Image (tube, rainbow, N blue to C red; front, side):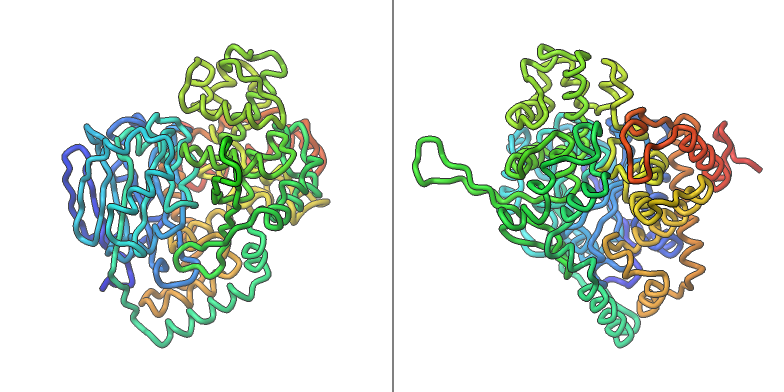
Length: 595
């Protein structure tokens, strides 16, 4: 039985095929787990300025004290150096990953080195096995790889299977890691880091349990949180329609990026909306382990066999708002079926759907402007809404038959800097934008959030709250910083951010007590600011300079719900952020500690 505070860290060296366990209670006592502990472990293990695709890069998976104990505490934090941005990489995923790691007895897993041959690593409790993966390396579909591993590995029901597809093997800088079948460590290229280490998959299973200090108090707090979650209107919304409920809402607001953000709404929004897909394609809902919400929606798509009447291939396809935005409205989708087929293809290759969609949107506009040619695209004529062309282009991004596809495999900004069209390459800090053209806070969030994710500080939320009364730059930055700091606590526990309005500071403080952890609300806020500082220090150490941030011109050309954004206003936001980051981290622009 594990203690309520995680303490064991499993280290795996792929170069030597060795593993060992260290007691790091010191880190978990100081930083709880998740984001906080992963930041410090990465800082300890990652040499400065290494090649993200070299053997010196390090992958950290970390869970926290709430995992396996409280509802919606279903996430695992992955931290690494990103091959996509060249800086701090952080990605979160659910499925069974967090519960499996915790019940295997670990608070974190650190993966170092690189294997000489393709392997998958299996962690079953205190045993670690290095398996020969040559037979599954190169398989076209990551779904097939998952099915094979399910057959040959023990631990059914209490295990997680994290794996990469062809995109990861080919080290495409935005390749993802698929966990179970419908969840992903999606952003910033963890799949490429797996590929560089010749690590095809990581399987973890655990049959342990976690002790609590006060069982009666734990039961009372658990019941209270469970009731808050299942009674929440927000959770009801995510259960019934899922995150694609945002399609209609954002379209009506004029905040749904469409056609590479040439527009902020699209006429076909209803036909790609969550309500439409639920009515016409929904097959089932599934849930991450330890979550009562079941927000994961699976569509059923039937495709006839060409020469066999009345025979169909039936495919279950997981869908969320972000893939629908990136592979749907951004590409001029007319109806959901095409979008679902493209999502399935992107998933089978193991590509990040959001980045892939933004890259394709940039290429479509670049072709229409004559910046690139059909020859550069190996004969593929990209046009808005032409999904046969997009399916072919995705295949070519993985196979890379031309120089342009090799560049597209490194992201929109990389391709634009080489071929032209930087003004409409929708990339922030090297990461392609999320689906929110809501106003200035969203773009400040994309540009200055520590992982350039809309989940860093939910700027889109602040934008929607302040329509008609845009905050002054200083206030806007202060509110984003407060939100991002608090989220460091939630992602160190580690709870799903969908439940952030349930896990308020008072609730978190109360929920820690039965685990033997005494932290006041002030203590929690202070810890959040500390983790933010440490994370940003690591980001600066690896070369990020907030002074160098720029915004693509396109965001100033298409009206938001706050009207047309002003470059002058965003420049003031940037100056406020530069000041804040330098002040919080205590590091000047030269990279040295101030004072």
